[in-house]
Each structure stands twice: as structure tokens, then as C-alpha cells.
Amino acid sequence: MEITENAELVGRLLDVMEHDILPMTEQGVARGNKIFGGALLRKSDLSLVMAQTNNETENPLWHGEVHLLKCFYESPLSKQEPTRDMIFLSTHEPCTMCMSAIAWAGFDNFFYFFSHQDSRDSFAIPHDLKMLKEVFGLEPGGYNHDNAFWHGRGIFGIIAALPDDQAQPLLDQAQRIRARYADLSSAYQSSKDDNAIPLN
Image: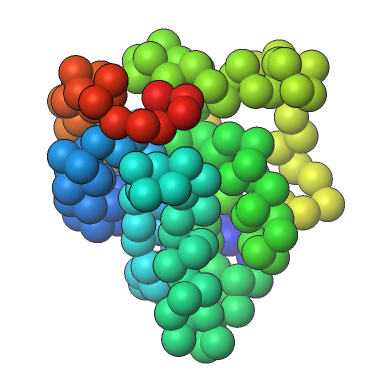
């Protein structure tokens, strides 16, 4: 099933970030976890299947996306909801591990709000870009956003292609979301030395 990249899609992805992922992330950050999260939505009607957040204090592999997949496959939903019929939403552009997990799980897409550069520059979490450079020799944005496994799309790229009257309300909502993540980032950075996450 094709995904139509329009204002309705973006509005729904932003709503899920603001109302489903962010509350979980606030709790996760309070436990010492990073700010990353994700959600699964049905392509057919954009309804929410599941949302989750980072849980690296339990296991350093439980990035937001991988922890979401773990919880999904531990749920009866995984027997009822084919991944090919779902949208994968990531709050931040997925790292190389999470991109691979998305592919291995059979998703043909992912959408993200913050970029790798945002993770480094706005949130002082540079590991995604460092991994791309050190392991794969890639510069920022150097991976194939369209490949045999999935199509990766930044939400702001979709907004930029919309008419102004459709884009502006979405940008207003995005600004609210950015402000909440900035507060969560400050909370995480102020306490990160208290946890045992290897790459904090």
C-alpha cells in the first residue's frame, strides 16, 4: 500500500509524537534514558498500533526503535498486524542499528522528525553520525534514503513541499514539540553521568 505524503499524514505523525510518544519519553528520561522514541501506525487509516521510547538503562540495545520492535514482537499484535501494512515513525533519524532492524522486521518505510545533525547539534548525542563515519565511511546524509528495503523520509522535507496554508499549522505544532524535546534533552544531559549507558 502506498503512503501519501501530505498534510494529513504529517499532522497525524506529529499528533502521535506529541500525545503518545512524548509522555512515554518523559517517563523514560526520568529513569535516565535518552530522548528517542517511535511508533507504528496502520497505513490504511493512520491509527496507532503501538508507541514506545528508549530503554537503554535496561539494555543498551533498546534504542527507541529497537525497543518498540521488541515490545511489538512480544505482543499478540505482531501476529495480527503485518509490518508491510504499517508506517514506522521515529522521533529522530534512526541510527545504523535501528535502520537495519527496521529492514529486518520487514517495514518498507520510516519517517523521522529530528535529523542526525539535530541529534548531534541540538541534543549533544553525536553517536549516529560518528558511527556512520567511523564504521561505514559516510558523511551526514550519505546513506541511501531510497533502497531495496525502505524509503526514509524527514517530516520537515514533506512540510516544505506543502502550500503555506497547510504547512504553517504543522510548523506551529512542530515548534511545540521541539520545545518539549529541548526540555527533555536538558534533563537527560544533566543526569546522564548517573546511568550506565555505554554511549551516553
